[in-house]
Amino acid sequence: MKYCCRCMQPDTRPNTHFSDAGVCPACDYVEAVKGVDWQERLDILADLFSARKRKPGVFHDCIIGVSGGKDSTRQALWVRERFGINPLLVCLSYPPEQTTHRGMHNLSNLIELGFDVVLSAPAPATWRGLKRDGFAKFTNSFRSTELALFAAVPQIALRYGIDLILWGENPALQLGDMKALGKTGYDGNNLRHMNTLSSGTQWMKDAGYTPQQLLPYNYPQPDEFIAADLHIVYLGWFLGDWSLVNNAAYSCADGLEIRADGVQATGDLYGVTALDEDFTPINQMIKYYKFGFGRTTDYCNEEIRLGRMSREQGAALVTAHDHACSPDYIARYCDYLGISVDAFWDRVRAATNRELFDIHADGSIHRRFTVGVGLATEQAAA
Image 1 (tube, rainbow, N blue to C red):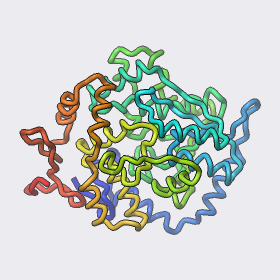
Image 2: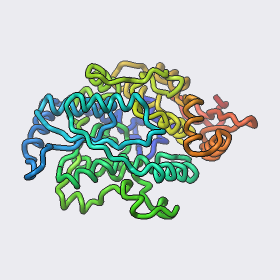
Image 3: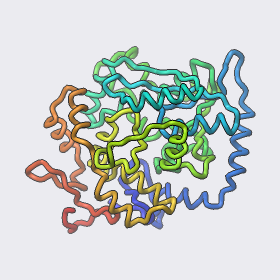
Image 4: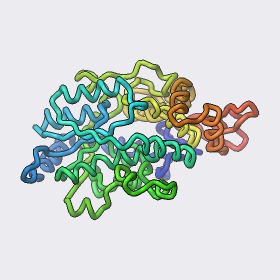
């Protein structure tokens, strides 16, 4: 395990590749855009909007997938205010057991701000069954729900005859998932290749789910995109100040409600992510035990790249909080899946990366690496 020489990005992130100089793709991108003419990029976006005309009977210029969170709220407001664009907002609705009041407030806030919103709500029983099966098979109950999250937007775009989808950050350039890289910095049609979508639905079929049950989880095929002339554009490529914190600041000014549970419960330094549900911190904690990085790493990386945090400060925060997750959230999650907390931890320990972590006799999990330095053969457990 090695770290980027500039930020806290480890080389264990799926689909990432460091340069010969030891720099991660996201840091390379930040360096590359220092000389960018942002007005020129905005002109490109304006040309993209003007070149795409609504089809007869279509009342929206584009679709934006929303959760009511910081990124989607900023996107919707920005394109409307800056370009006079009328977006249709699409939200994948979680079952009641997973949804938070905070999330409902933020979605309602978008409606009150004057946007049209379509909800996609997969069958709750299938949703729960797939989450249970995903956890048992991959120690990741989000394998299925993330497929539905990503599939809902292009599915509804095809059904409504809308040929432009606006997405937020480019996962290749801004996170380092290079398989999602398109023909240009704003081309999102290769989003289907990102790590989140790579598992597909075959494992669900093997588990006995019918094609009808799996309809909400099927990301449209490339030929469907081509036939509809459907394109995904990354808005983050056009915004020089796109970041977790900046997007939250913009959105809070327009009514966004953020978390109040603290970094010790979520690994979220500022309380601005996963606002619509409380199971994501669990997934981030499990990701930490699999790959050696979690939610705090992503925050610190952005702050380091923006010059608002030193690498040393980032290392201290990652060390303290990257594994954080409230026991209350874990208990609720286990109750939802119908498993015991002991069974949950048995599964997590079985999936823990033994090259990166030691598991002691009492079941506790301990790092074998030093945050910001990496894994050394003779290094003492942290």
